[in-house]
Length: 75
Image (cartoon, helix red, strand yellow):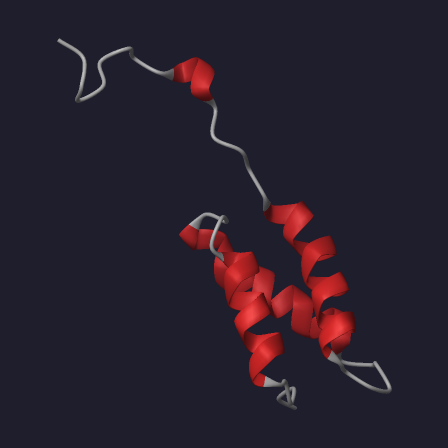
């Protein structure tokens, strides 16, 4: 059963998915939906809290230690 989300909640989830790897975004959204499926009321606050909790499971910071040192601005 699809979730009924407000425009604000949907926008919030899209913003929370932006820093994730593209391959993880659909899994992130599916996990958020799974977490919200049994909620009595789904408001923007609940969606934000659950979205941030689920985002933490998927967030992978960039590993700067693996750089080659050959950036496009380097001469």
